[in-house]
Structure formats: C-alpha cells, structure tokens
Image 1 (cartoon, helix red, strand yellow):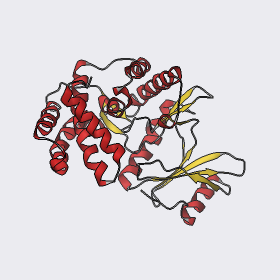
Image 2: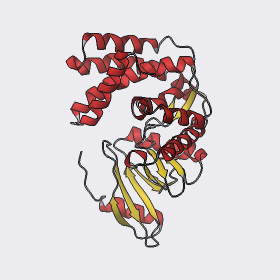
Image 3: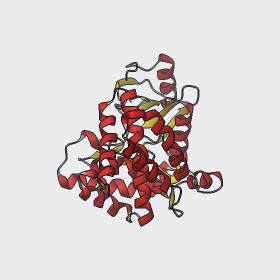
Length: 297
C-alpha cells in the first residue's frame, strides 16, 4: 500500500494555520496495513503533532466523535488530543502520545505485562465513556447481530479458501451470536490490538491511538484482536490485561468471543489475499485452525 510521502501543500498550510506556526514534516508515520495517511509534524519549538487523513468520511466522523466525546476520559498523555479537524480534507490534527506501538517493541516479560495491564485499565475507562442512550444504545445492542449477519457475506467472498467443515463451524459459531443473552455494552476502540497500544519504557506508561473504528457495541468485541493474536501464545498477558480491566469475561462473553473470532478469521482470509498481505492471511488461518481444534479459549 503506497501513499504520497508528503501531505498536499493546502493540507500542510491548514495545519500551520491551526497551530499558529510553520511546521515541517518529520516523517511519514502511516502504519502498515492501514488506509489512513499519517505524518509526524514538528513546530519550530520542536513540539510534535500528527496530521492524519482518514480514508473515507465514516472513519473520519467516527474518530472525530471519539476524540471529542469519549477519548478524553482516558486522560492526558494516554491518548491524542484533538487540536483541529477539517471535514473538507477529512483531516485531524493531533497531539503526540509518548511511546511506540507494542508490536514494534521488544520488552522484558515484566514490561509486556505492565503494558497489557495498563492497556486494559485504559480500555475500561473508554468503555464507560460516551452517552450510551437512544440510538447509541440501539446500535450497541444490535452489534453482535450485525457481526452474525456479516458471516454469510464473508463466507461467500472466501469461496474455496475454507473447507466445508470450516464453513459449517463458522456458520454455527456466528449463529450463536444471535442467541446470547444481553451482554455488557460499551464505547469500544474497535481495533484494540498491539498496533494501537503504545508503551513508553521511559515513562512506564501506556496509551491508545487509532480510533477510526470506534463505536458503541458489545464490550467483548474489543477483545477480538488480542485474543486472535498475541494472547494465543501468552495467557499471562491476557491475565494481566483483565487484571487492569477490572473484571474477567462473563461466560456468555466467552461464547461471543468465539463467534466473533470465527467471523474475523474469515474476514482476514478474504482481506489478506485481496491486499497481498500474508500477515493478515496467516492470522485468519491460525484463528480458524485454533477454532477447529477446539483450543480457542
């Protein structure tokens, strides 16, 4: 995936006006496997900011809403602050957050556990932020049904990438999402994985970025990325996470997590080849293999 390595002059001029000073582009900070364009900016006083252009209006609107109405609950230094936004450019001007994405760091075990514990604690704050009433509650209550509805569409797109037994398993697990009792609702991050969880070894401090998929949904939906990824080999990190989060998953949430993981696995198997991304493809295959073997916790 390639983007211009420099923002458009008009976009850079907008950022300079909003910051009240000339800015220079420090580097292209766009994450791998994301459609957003992100640049690190530097003012003459050496203070850093990030200029982010969303790939489409819905993601811009989601992230803008999150940064204004829910994200501040996590506290300064743990999340970016919104300095300015431009619907014309689909652009956000954000403060920098200390640290680097967890997936880019090599940490001692104690550091990994601290990062996951703090990440879970911060996510707990996010989950209770926002006004969960009216249409927001309705959207949250329907989130698992929407995930179940997407399973058939994903399976059609996957074609022969799955065996008949795997397709049957996915349909069964996705179908169970329709039968679950009411689960805790929340304002979720939407992509709460190691790409967006920051850790500063110097400060011993975690932070979250990347809120363009945030929304009101079932809280358990925020645990899919970690459950399908690093927690598969590191139950100690899962334990640290939920220690910070303040509670373990309910029995019904564990069942929901399996259904959500099945849907996510098929999505990865579709998206990976479509974007020539073997990492995403391998993630989907591994999750599906774990579900087939009955070892997905």
